[in-house]
Length: 207
Picture 1: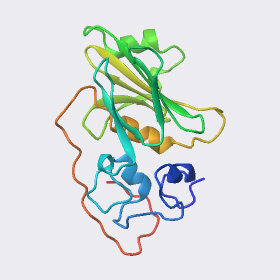
Picture 2: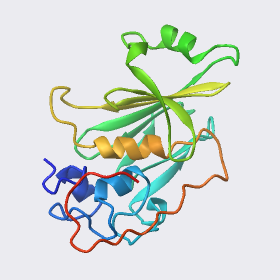
Picture 3: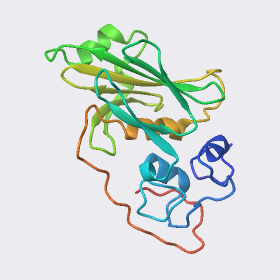
């Protein structure tokens, strides 16, 4: 359920401490789901960034150096000692896994995909650029994302308890891949322009 049509499920509203009946919690003209997916704070007037909100943490991987944001209330833990395989878990049991695969610089992403992604279709992937300017590949449903570098392929995969059930944390998945950086970088997301609109109605827009 998404009672207020702000592209955050009611479960995610609880996760981020937002009122499920309010489309734009901070009344800055951007709806709550839009702010989270673009890495801005839904509880503070623009241009407050999500990382400064206290609603998320930044994880930095010791093995490869990648970094991303994840919800403050979620747990994170490594499946292996080197943390090539990480799980970011909700209390409900849903989780998002991030895996690091080593590859050679001469291997293209398409070649890696053919060998290492059995059951997946390359035709269902499209390229995109995240909020930090990192180029990646995203499956059409937005639940599987790949980032390719000369030395590694990073995969981010949403895992459900019941594959036939609705997806409760779709926007949280988006915040994780939108915040992904393969290494440390000085690049920052652009400042958000305030759009204070009294009595804003729940219509879909984009930043």
